[in-house]
Length: 167
Image (cartoon, rainbow, N blue to C red; front, side, top):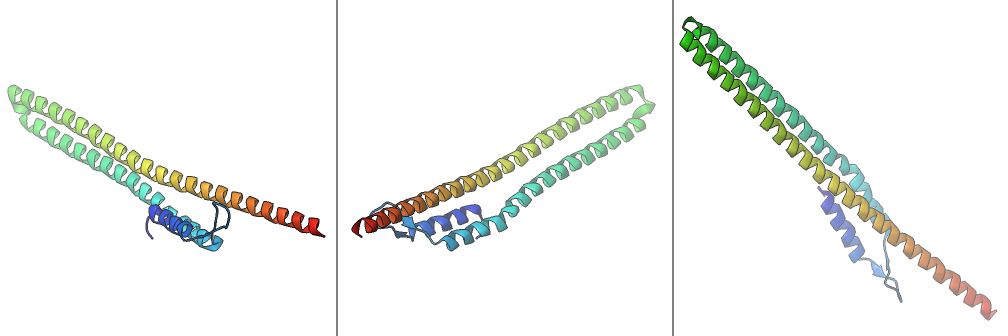
């Protein structure tokens, strides 16, 4: 199994294949099978977290590449401006172009950074949602299990009371 959804499917399969408890709407679940799936979830959960970490690292890499590109463009603009300083008109045009390159680069960096942050946020949101879903499912299964045991105890108690009444 590779994803949390596969584990949820496995839990559903266990529940679907479980035997019904007579005279109730409850089922008898093999505890070990559920615990095995939960254990697998715990073992594989860090993969989702590692995936989110990789997204953050990719975000940092994109920003560093943008900074490097900006520095390269700035150096190119400075070199070009120095070459053109002999003539005032040429210098003015070069200065204007350098300013445009700088503004375009800054705009590009901002856009790349925002896109990287949006992507990282989206991936973290998906991971958070999956973890929340697993937690809710596990909580619900735990409640079902407690209800089942509570009803079983009540049936046993009632049976004992009936036996005592016959003596």
